Image: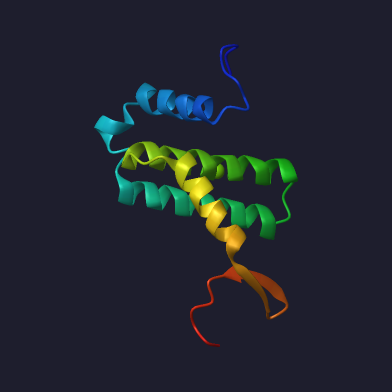
Length: 115
Ligand SMILES: [Mg+2]
């Protein structure tokens, strides 16, 4: 990271991802194509899964999570939406939801279905 970047700033994180997209011209080369990005996100989710199921280090798990986060934030750039705003809006919704124990694990949902 360069000295002008603030690690705690969402805008600086997004700016770094924008610079990464610009460096490789993702916009002009299919890198911002949404179905392609879904495939890349699925691939990273698979890597997170193997980091866990194959008992890899927390550092490796963290790196794969960062890969997915960079893709998710880059998808906000590609699809032109404000992910920070969506995040807080959704957190607000989630905090108002009820939780239930289902098969021994907690689930937070709207629980619209009766079962
Ligand atoms: Mg990865």
